[in-house]
Length: 411
Image 1 (cartoon, rainbow, N blue to C red):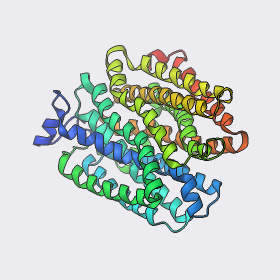
Image 2 (cartoon, rainbow, N blue to C red; image 1 turned 30 degrees about the vertical axis):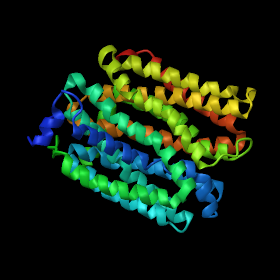
Image 3 (cartoon, rainbow, N blue to C red; image 1 turned 120 degrees about the vertical axis):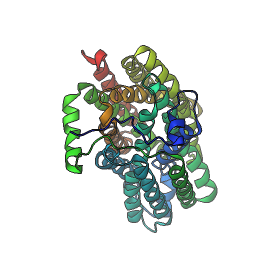
Image 4 (cartoon, helix red, strand yellow; image 1 turned 135 degrees about the horizontal axis):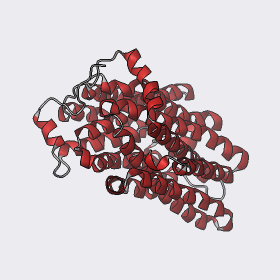
């Protein structure tokens, strides 16, 4: 296989500036902002589900497909397109996806029916994978001894985008309607596309494999690296619980005894922001103490936080809200710390295949999210909030078992 070192980048001024180890330079902030805005697009709909369902006269089951198809589109996009960053200029791929994402958000904003909204949601998920082209770009530009910190910095932007997206969409939807949120997001991504085109260096491909061989190599890489399989499985399980919580929260809060609107549901994103802010710390611990330790600590914290929600019936309505807020802080922190550590693990396996390694990890993660959204809505309908709690706790506990299984200390 003919390969070029992935760290080889055309020696533009911007490229040298990004690669410099001293501090966080403006292009790195651009990477973090781009990752955050792209990832945020996946979650704008969640606090607005009850509102848009009423506006489009859609059933709860149909509305529940909006986050499911968005996550499924993201998983498919990661699988089918994320490996392209190893074969073609990553900057061109990032900018093209940004343009498509802007169009998908605009389509969602003008959708006259739930059917068109579902189609836009699938396209939105496919294009939002530009966030996962940005993360390996940051890993490529970082010195090996600072890779955890650099990835953590960019992931802070990505995770803040995910978590604060719910706050923003909840407030905007309540004040101006759900369509305004999608249209504003479309305009923002269009501006981002221009900034990324001007601010990013060109990346030299690391392989000349054909697309078919590139996709086939995903299977080979997965078979070759037990650490990749373990990381993907554990993060996928954690993501199931994460998605089950966030995709059902707005519907649960909309009913008795809370009777709260989309702004209240979105405000829970502020609680989860603590997890995003902890991402650089997780990266530093992974650099110093080893990422395996961080994965176990993160999964353990998620188990405790999800299980704590089982105490909800013991509290009055206001106490339940505080319990939910505390749980959101805990499991977000744990799951995001585990993700940073898992990325640190896989990026060290094969520097020439970081895009494909990331594709395997993130595809599995978002398959877990799609399953979590689907199973979470079913659990809520059949068993109430306790069903969601049991589902999330069980998936996180299984992820912890995966990380504690013999052999996990080295993978």
